[in-house]
Amino acid sequence: MKNKLLANLALFMTAFIWGISFVAQREGMEHIGPFTFNMVRSFLGTLSLLPVVFWVKFSKPDNRTERRKRYQHVNLARAGIACGLALFTAMSIQQYCMQYVTAGKAGFISALYIIFVPIISVLQGQKMEKNIVVSVILAIIGLYLLCYKVGGGFNIYDLVLLVAAFFYGVHILVVNYYSEKVHPVKASCLQFLVVGILSAILTTMFETPTVSAIYDCRVPILYAGILTCGVAYTLQIFGQKNTLPVIASIIFSLESVFAVLGGTVILGETMSPKEILGCVFMIIAVVLSNVKFGNIDKLGRKRA
Image (cartoon, rainbow, N blue to C red):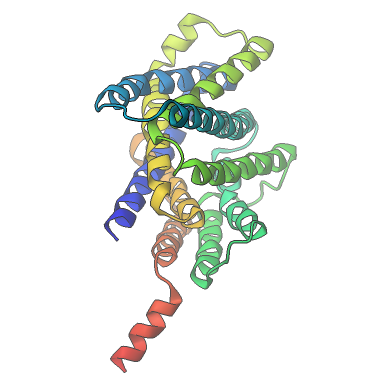
């Protein structure tokens, strides 16, 4: 029970950091291109985690056999590459499409990974609990009320963002698969190195960043690199050790709530009654995702 509580708290903090990062991303796009932004933030995330990686490595004696070391190194490499590829695809598509789609639409469509996670999980043979089904429905309604702007319709970039949402869902499931096999900090560090290298390739192909532009963007990049990458994704890997991927995805969907709150506090934006109602739906969904209907029925019978 304690491990589950700590895991959910870690995922909650992850959603908070991710939500506020929408403010940093919007500010950053005023100075540099999307691939440059992802490249620098990913390398910063890698560098910010290196001291922790070395601390983990040398903090206690390594009594593993050589065969065990080789096995774990192979698993770490596989985890870093698999997580990095999924995350790179999702981040690149999302960041690029935000040039052509409003922030509200981008937040809503990207967060539809909460649909893809249970769909993929069911296809893998995992049972779908009733409370999870209801929570997913409530979360989708909340995201719609919170982020969707009436009258905008769908354009090609709206549809492309669905691909980003799919790969965010894939990333959650890949992290869940490797969370018991590798150290979370090492895996997080390696996945951002992969994202940084791949983003650097796209940067050289499509963008011409300057040092002055990157310097002007230093505050958003530092936040996105150190907190969003270095801290949040490590908390994600740690938290998913003791939480079902579907529940994790619903908690992560709270990032839209924090994005609106961040816009209100930092950018001076206001929340409409519809957006506030969306926040309420999201909070109910998160609470409900951690309460099984069967447990409620048993409690009711005992009281009767």
